[in-house]
Image (tube, rainbow, N blue to C red):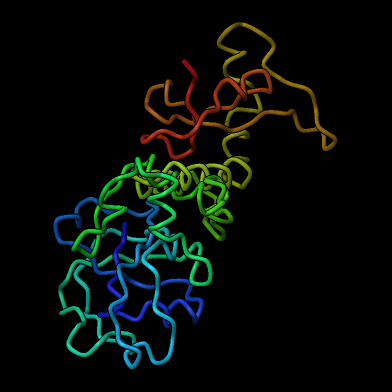
Length: 274
């Protein structure tokens, strides 16, 4: 959870410009917990600005105004004193900071705390009552409760797959390391881009388009041929196969049994069902 006091920083003016990325100062205690690929919601506190301070804009109702993806680990910020900051309210250089990407902007239709309290009184009291800090953690169930009230799909919220990445297995290993602590939704997005992209094709070629599970069971491991003459097989990842997250190729018979929401350790988002 990222928290904004509009009296210190005019988030309404900022969001009106439809930003795509920015940085956010976070609570020092939370700094070690931030990692690329995590998702965050932006909560705006009570708007105590005067009419003059709002420059004629309507006061903001307390609520959720944006969903972001964390793009970096914490780093010492260079200071925050742009035009949206109130006088003497900016952050000093060195304050723990993370890079963020805006996925959704709800300036025109925020999820008010009043509605959240009425429809989901079971969520964290910090989410309902606020917390005097720039950031604080919330449970996944609370995050998804917010998504549901916003009418969002938790699989599509993260947007399109990553593009322009080098199609190598070394790049895949780097992605797995970078996004080890990413949210399940982000892992699913990256996993789909890998499976359907050049890296997935490289895994298939390396395994000669064979279903490794069928081969291990002594069954025919070459599937039906597609129109281009290439045997059908899918590149996937299985957390049950050591080492965790190993990349394997499977035929259509084993595709669905391997699929479930991604776990913490698997970038590809594939794990055998119990």
